Image 1 (cartoon, rainbow, N blue to C red):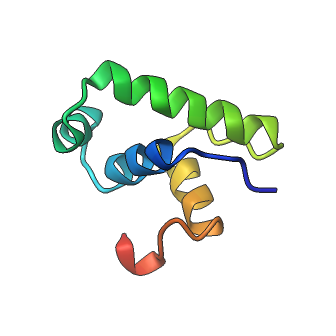
Image 2 (image 1 turned 30 degrees about the vertical axis):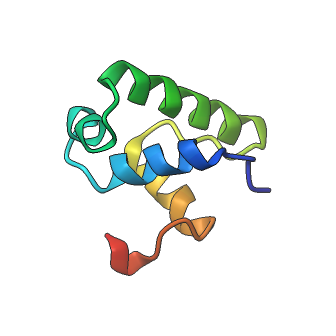
Length: 75
């Protein structure tokens, strides 16, 4: 089951996956690292709630691939 991520949560997730750090992702989206952390916490909570925990960046990348949010060529 796929969690109901908001469009902003997806945007933050994809920016973070494509960045070397949360700080860089925040700069790209013009938001603070704290806001990035808040979004990522909510994303992780939503994945855990549907029985698909993703506690690491690698796990979130795997979930994004499984849910067709990104393609392997995007990595």
